[in-house]
Image (cartoon, rainbow, N blue to C red; front, side):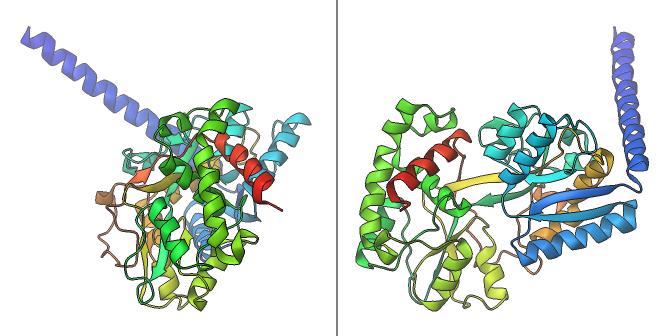
Length: 388
């Protein structure tokens, strides 16, 4: 019996070694095929720090892997999704215009639903072993990623204030409304369908609903009408005391940051827990700026990289995505002097970094995103009610 057990253990060990060797050989072939390829990386181009980081990563890819990365600067991933859909409808099943896309949420859901993604590939990347799988790296807005996209960074709704003007921040949606009434004209949020504005709506929807679990399912008309009723009632009250009486809204989080710096608003918001620290470092906010969240948590998610089904440089796209998941690239991205985008890797894989007091406190819980289908429904109804 002991001999049989030993043989079984030996068989398992040999099998594991064989699988590891096979995976290494497969990855080596991918790296060889990637050499000389050009990756057209479609990623948001509206942030200077982000653009500079992508430029740095592209230089590294060129030096290390003989890959050329072209940053195609986009304003809305939905437009890229439409382009991929158009190519598929035209029969362009190879040599597509997009090799890698920065994506999540409803855009990923649409691409997956219409089978417009290559894969699975993400969990076969060598650097997948460094990923912190306790984070929602395998769920994207309640949609299973199924290895069709690789995690790149984490995000969480973060409120920003100036301690010299607001020493004790509101710690809930209800408290925020009370604060707004006490400070008329000094509270607002970005106009939906801007990403940050829609995220604020989802935050309120989650907090104002005891049946938040329903939000993880595809939206249905009856549930939408019932669950959004407290949201619209809340916004009606908020808008009556908000900046510009709720008849106008900041266009973006960047505009809110500026109004916070100017003293026009008392609270700004971001989807980057480190952004206040970055804004302080770049002298765009005073050193008294700080981040806060609600005591029950704020909405958060992971953003990803995906490869379209008809990408021309599938191998190079995987090699570049794997580099972006490396401890070196993730630590550089998380550096407040670079971008400040939080890592998706295990903390043990990253160099120790001192906690900056202006980043979002780690004890603020992360609330899961509603199902991606709620986004469009919320935006349409908001525009119908308040858009004019």
